[in-house]
Image (cartoon, rainbow, N blue to C red; front, side, top):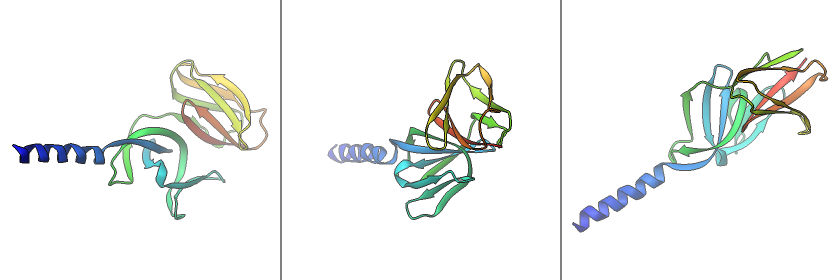
Length: 157
C-alpha cells in the first residue's frame, strides 16, 4: 500500500512538472500557423522591416512573424515550443496605402493604433468579423495595432 501511495504521489508531481501555466509569446505567421514560445526563453523581438523572434543567445527562433501576442499558456517544461494550426486574426494588406482590413475579431472589441514609438494615435471599435480602418492620413512608416492582447505590426506606404 505504501508503495502504491508513493508511486501515485510521484506520478502527480511528475504531472505538475510537465504541464504548467506559464507566460508565453505566441507568434503568428502570415499563413495562420502559430508557434508558442515560453516567454522566459525569448531574448528579443525586433520590428525593423520584418518581425523576428530571437532566443537569449541571439539565435533566430522565427522570422516572418505577422503578429505576436502575450498570453498564459499550458507549457510542457521539456519542450521549448508547441506548434498548432488554428483560425486567427488577420490584418491585411501589409504594406497598406489607404484601407487596412482586420478580420477574425468579435464585435465591439477595441483596436488601438500606435506609432512605432508606442504613442497611442487612435482607438477604433471592431464590428463583428471584419473591420476597415482608413490609414490614408498616416505618414509612411511602421505602426502597431493592438487587438485585445495581440499586437500586429503593419507598414504604411
